[in-house]
Length: 334
Picture (spheres, helix red, strand yellow):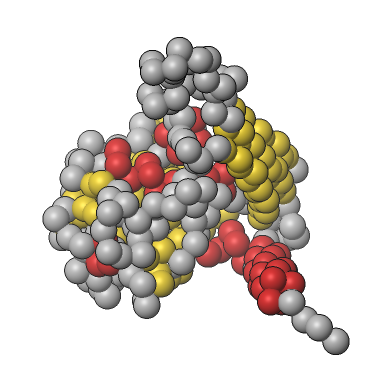
């Protein structure tokens, strides 16, 4: 029996993709709990400023079905770690004091938000709603970095739909040039595989997705580019980051994926580019300057399409999401 090399390679690619798909689907049940990159902390005091120990603190995210309960310690301090990015409410209850509730406490990826409370003596069962006390400057860490938020990731026009290209929005960050000798330079249809930031080499960047290592140790690059439709937001820490990361001397890129909610929803998309919508290439003039003949416009067609669905997957894992994307491209090379 004759086996062609091309058919063998196609079969290998098919089974590798099938294995990755099965692996992703089998991990959907734990997808919600994997997104653990932010925290809420603060101090609880009374009207005189004295700390309150033993106060019950409840942190909720109704969209993700998350509820966490902690109590303040002897110094009135509380902390709720390992939270996915999103909008939270924080409620504080203590016998003899009015209940306090802080709404719309926004957590970004790898953020330590501070929410303090000052409780009043109870005169009724009224719940006092307080404003979020998030500071413009994060005082809980000395890390220098910037978050590329969900609106930017999902809405900004992006040629090729590769999230690594968005790193150029962070000051001091560029995509490696095509002419370099590394394997991280951009490839047609795949985007860049690394970034150069804060004066460091591209192979010193540490990529993490939902807290999981995403680095190709052999080539010093990201192992794969998640679909832009599955990325919620990401943060690039340029320097003085926490010792919990380690490993790399360069930047830390923390990626948070989009999670499902307690309701089913989805989306479908198509990004179209072709020569009908593009201007002519500079070297493809309409009229040949030498012969005077009319040149045919170089053909170019690119279709990027896919779908995303999300919803509840069970009582213990209330939300998950899955996405698929494909790209077809054709262009003339002259």
